[in-house]
Image 1 (cartoon, rainbow, N blue to C red):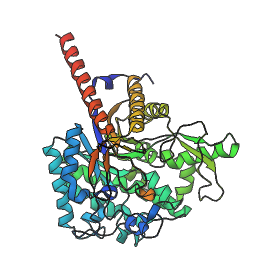
Image 2 (tube, helix red, strand yellow):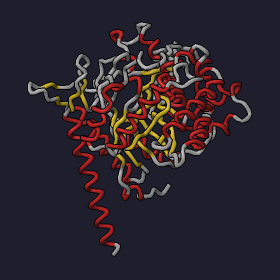
Image 3 (cartoon, rainbow, N blue to C red):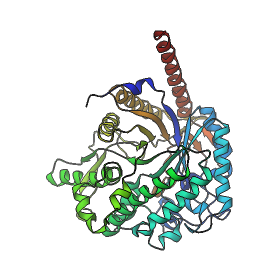
Image 4 (cartoon, helix red, strand yellow):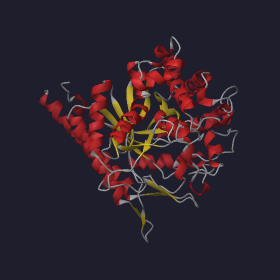
Length: 456
């Protein structure tokens, strides 16, 4: 492909991301129903038995959080709606109090001149639907389409950027193959049903959003990471190829090119009805990318898919959570996705867990996060210069938050949250990111002025 560099003339959207269960709290307030993560947390499977009951209390402190974003100068904020907050049993009568919360949040964002990017599903399925089979049953696509319609009708006058799912390969594999995330299953057949039904739900929701939101710009958010063998053994090399089909292509390939990989196509064949692939492959406007690092893979005969996560080579540096730091893989991923899917790319999660340094003054220093973000943003610019059509970059995350089965042990935020007092403190990385945004905006404005002068 002869890559074009037209994206260099376009100003990037700079943002931050969060998700409902990780920050909202208020788990038992204003009619919210339980989610699968509420249930999972009470099964003793989360570090220190942490829960999202309070989290960052964003439900009550959203105005303060919007002010933090405004002061940072971000253009956009990607958040998710909690399905059980607006539909406590997942279907049927809507919960007005829950809907009103997102009205308040969206209006506050718009008043602060921050564009809302709304994700329909970031892993908190209503427990009532899980009790009916959840994503393992075909009816789940109907439930999701109805939920998408409710959200579209309620917020579509103010929200135009909508994503269907966040990281479906993560919640499917970790929740249904490895048992590490809600609902905590290790069942190959269930995994395959989930993959296909979530893809069907995506297609159904795209149709509904197009019908209910005038001027909608829609997509899905996929994690894509090179899958590398932990060793040079034949078994690990084959495992990496297998894992990559589940991790990187099980959702974007059917959604965007209308087919599963050969391995998945054979496994899913009994589940695919006549019109399913046409339902799944709906036109979208952009590709949402979450990327942190490559994934290292090893063969595992005890895994329901015959492989699993393996160690990175000893010489590879790691973040506080143990993930490899390999920025060049980010550039490679952006270029390969741009070539493969030919869609504008928005990086909707990139960031790192670090150990904060709290000074006597109360200031919070996180130089490792700054170094990580600087390296990855530099690689993104290299990809843009090489022709990748990247339109935006969002840091994960605005706030330190509930980090799934790691509980509150890992801090990804630009803003530190004291989990006892819930006080927010912008870290040095938040100030660095604000300066980065301003510098890029100024550079773009200067380029526009130069272009305009040359065109006179």
